[in-house]
Image (cartoon, rainbow, N blue to C red):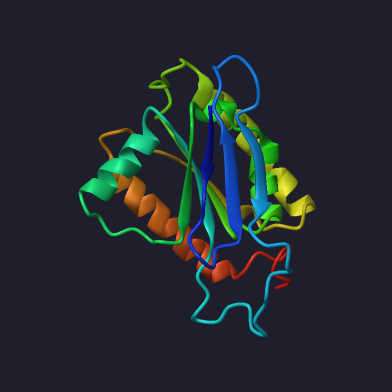
Length: 184
């Protein structure tokens, strides 16, 4: 099953997501720029008008439902976040995060089930071990490690998800635009 998420006007990120069984095949096929034109940069990267573009990979069973709860409860959340639902955060490969950053995201949030509550038993624990490696690779790839954050939020924790995504946007605003794609 393929799902194509069309971004809002002005967004540079388009995401194609392929959902398959937990044990087989890739989860995300491509993250590509909506336009092939180079991103326009401002002379000062940390202007007050800068609104970071955030990609959030959310577990289908917990965090995505928590994000949905936050939305249906009309909790305040930044509008500049693109949520990608994945079957399990354990299926998120490091290359997905790096590709999102290289294709124009200013930050990436990964949100999954609390440790011990994974629908697939240990998927979130697998991600947590890969996350340590990811943080060390980010600097080598030209990104600040703070551009990527991992949080746990259950389906009943819409407020936790909303606070987490708001903090993520604030953190990335302080960092400024993506140094690789926006030439900061």
